[in-house]
Length: 480
Ligand code: FAD
Image 1 (cartoon, rainbow, N blue to C red):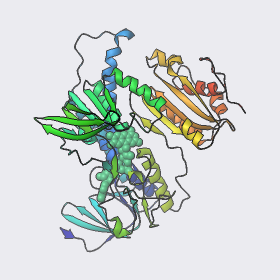
Image 2 (image 1 turned 60 degrees about the vertical axis):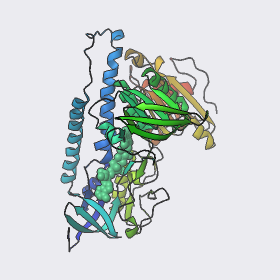
Image 3 (image 1 turned 180 degrees about the vertical axis):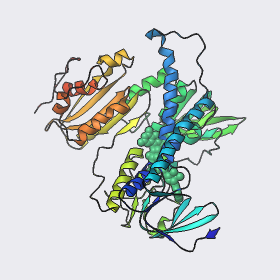
């Protein structure tokens, strides 16, 4: 190792090139600051390389494959036994998508004057980082730093990932073949998304979840619709069940699980085991203590609305900060941190961070659920509209699900919008905008929605809240 003698000076160093870090670096470049973006692996981070994008590519292929089963009733006949899914071919396609996006990020960094350095960064003090780049070690002196080192899968002590039989989400997305049997530890959103995708591709999937229900952080009314589809796909769900141990013998895994209610033990055999029980922030090995940056007892870096840590010229964004681990939150924080550093008035001041779960069907939401709104002391009116009463949904054979609006009876302001059904991921955009613009339920009901489209489910849920939806029998209305 050669130790660099002269520190390279820059306005800002950004550590980590995921959706938070690269968005911050590009915005800093746009604002005319000199910026060094250090990434030890690949630009795009977890999201682009082994998270959002590859998982959605798998879900897309799996959904296309699964849809072949329902083609006959739509009048389409395929010759018997012709459909097959080749995971190795899919890998090549996925890689082409990921590499196209990665190249795009690299190009945008370059075009905005961002100096991208490939290497592993560590704080040496509150104004210097050291970067190991293979055999070399460079020192950078900064006026501001942004920590965007993201997160990694959490593995409990009773399982040892081997990447062959015991997998994390990255390994699962790199499989060359669809496993015949797949046990998934953890029925949160990553476990459910990947579990349903593999079930669509033909795996016999068992999901073991310690909580009393799958998707424990999601309203039960929404997750029930997904549960029903899980049954259709032949997925076995074991809730209130804890995995005690995982043993590997003769190329297979043996899980011992215990159920909290019955207190019984059960064995499950599987070709592959996917562990998706959470993620931990990458804050342990980047020298935060040398810079004086504090972490909480779970390793997350607390920040204020401007994404500042306790050291005022060092910022933290994305999965290293407390809050939902979502790419769009990371990107928003990155842009805010960059703007604050450049002296612009900017802050993460919106509570309306949407979430999407790419299950079958999809779930999405923004704002408060009915229960949360009641806990906040609102007098709440919740109204929903089913997909089965929407013409487009029936015409495209997607009649499962519903859209729900949560309304403050006092002011008629929309407090939350939640949806389970086809294309929920795209439909929630309207909800985010409505809440961000402080829309009243009348605003949604008075907005002309195009026909025939799934977006009409929002229109009619809003009308239902006012007691005059056209395509369902109305039960109640918001009162003053
Ligand atoms: P990351 O994307 O984790 O990037 C951090 C980067 O920092 C990495 O590239 C890492 O190599 C680099 N790094 C770490 N330490 C150092 C160091 N010392 N020096 C230099 N570089 C370093 N989110 C969504 O919003 N929607 C989804 O559909 C979605 N699906 C997901 C599916 C899966 C399977 C997974 C695992 C995650 C998914 N996520 C999704 C979550 C999303 O990927 C993360 O929230 C997002 O990537 C966080 O961005 P980030 O910039 O904070 O960090």
